[in-house]
Amino acid sequence: MTKYIDFLKRAFSGAEVDYTKITIRSAVLLLAVPMMLEMAMESVFALVDLYFVGHLKESGYAIQSVGLTESVLSVMYSIAIGMSMAATALVARRIGEKNPEQASRSAAQVLLVSFIVTSILSLFGVIYAEEILILMGSKPEAAAYGKDFTRIMMGSSVIIMLLFLINGIFRGAGNAAIAMKSLWIANIVNIILCPVLIKGFGPVPAMGLTGAALATTIGRSIGVVYQLYHLLVADTQIRIALSYFNPDFKQIKSIVKIATPGIFQFVIASCSWIFLAQLVATTGGENASAGYQTALRLMMFFMLPAWGLSNAASTLVGQNMGANEMLRAEQSVMKTVKYNVIFMLAVSLIFFLLGDFLVGFFTQEAEIKDFAKNALHIMSVGFIFYGIGMVLINAFNGAGDTWTPTWVNFFGFWLFQIPLAYFLSKHFGMGPKGVFISIPAAETLITIVAFILFKKGKWKTVKV
Image 1: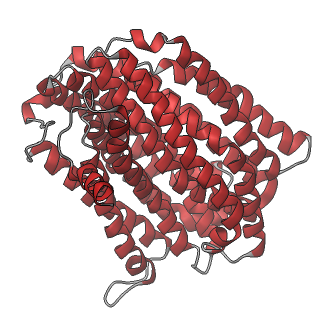
Image 2 (image 1 turned 180 degrees about the vertical axis):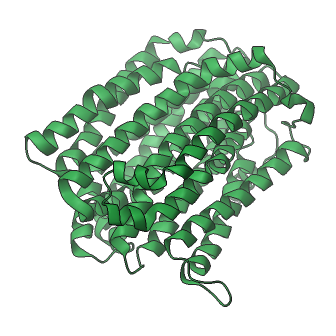
Image 3 (image 1 turned 60 degrees about the vertical axis):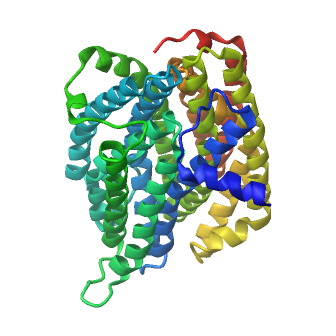
């Protein structure tokens, strides 16, 4: 027992470790434990909001607004994740080459580019919040109810981007503990502020759905302040001087080369999820949409830790390639696959056995619960394949080969999942159930293709 406690203390400490020298098992687990907890904390934001707004008077409108806004924000997440891929790949490769100063310079340039891009898109989200909700399938009255929530959340896109991106920088450096702690801080603040701002407390008026958006934004902002302290002030392996933000167009070109397909990779997936959300709303109505969004939030609560575990593959591939340890890079990926399969198998069992209880925690409306349970049971069929696919996709990204998973996602989501969902739900009259079935079907296909391409080994030749 003492051995395991010491291991956890080491994983949470943020102490610098040479991940190209220790055993692969230790390397995977030292990175995976804080990364899993980090991503679990990211999913808590949506679950906390969903829990509190699910008990508002207009809970159907509120749940739908939260869910549809998160679906649109997934495009912003895609940009943040795509840029963080570039940060992780570049930083990990330079750390593997034992060049922390150049790693810090690369990190600064990624931050500069990302801030400019996200600020522009955020402005459009603030101006057209209500129109965005209607476009997503929301009724005019529901859109009017939720527009302020959407406006605040879209306006905070820069904060969301910084939270993802800076954590990507620290993950690339192998310091997953700082990334994890920033999400802990953000979530603690959100959990405290949500009931206060939603329901009111003392002199603080009840703000309802708008209060949920403010609580989340304030929590994330404080998490970003913690990150910036460790990035700009604290004595860590990655430490950015203000002069590093001077534009380096050669470095920016390298960043764009890696990040552009990385952004498309997740925009492709996000747009597919947006289309599915709109399809559920139009074929099943408000309750189906609320049930689907509830199921998605629950699914993401468990999927994001699996994604965190798979992030270990990204860091280890990048650092080992920097150290010219190609065999060790591939072995690290397969070891991570093993652990993720075990985790996702456990999640599948939880959803099958406790689905009714989990859904009931967020809503007591019978029709919404039925849709949510149905979605959970169908989507969880493919969880093991999700787990394998995540690791392989992150392995490609960690190597700087962001084009391969982009094309895999394009064919898997847009040319297979979307047409399948459309025909099952509309042509065959299956409604929302047809949409649910298309999700594990597409993820299984994507995983099979990704595994074949990974084994071919082209990713080992990528230079960043």
